[in-house]
Image 1 (cartoon, rainbow, N blue to C red):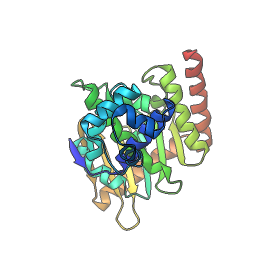
Image 2 (cartoon, rainbow, N blue to C red):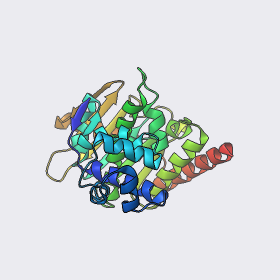
Image 3 (cartoon, rainbow, N blue to C red):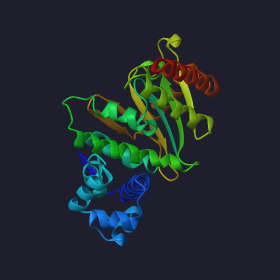
Length: 274
């Protein structure tokens, strides 16, 4: 695994501590007394300025009945863990002003909900422990924070219809996941285009591709297969990937039609879950 520094993880950790403390009906002072920590230290953790040590995390888990969350996520405060082949692409992703991704089988990582991502990350081979899965999950959720800025990066997601139809985690998980994409699309934060089964063969049948543009760098492409991935920078190759994407986009449903289909499939999953 590759590790990169990512101080924003401390903010996420602190937000979760505050959420669970308030859900338990405790003030910072009350939590400090029960967890044998200073109120100031807890305030700093919640603000993302400091990290707890292992003993602090254990006590927080015990007092807040967090099921080991604060211990499992502690290592992620020092950095993010990703597959070696994705580390370079992850660095580019954080700098991109525009991202266009094609997903043939799974919801793109940037758009995954917690429940959906947990199912995906727990399904690989060899099997991962809960701790390993949770470290990867923390990184995936952290990546999605780039969407908190309404304007950048501009994100286009082209989804094969198989992404909507494959019931990862069951109907309830899929309903939540599709409604998340639907909300982002309706709020104009992302553009979504579905490639329906009826299209048949299209220009991107061979696999996952992400295209990225930057303010002060040439565009790149990232292609991925099983346990492999490559960042492509040669202008002629990047242009070929862009052209293939454009050809497939021409076969896809419009943004409005895609949202309607996603809404319909989400409703089917909701009915099934009930």
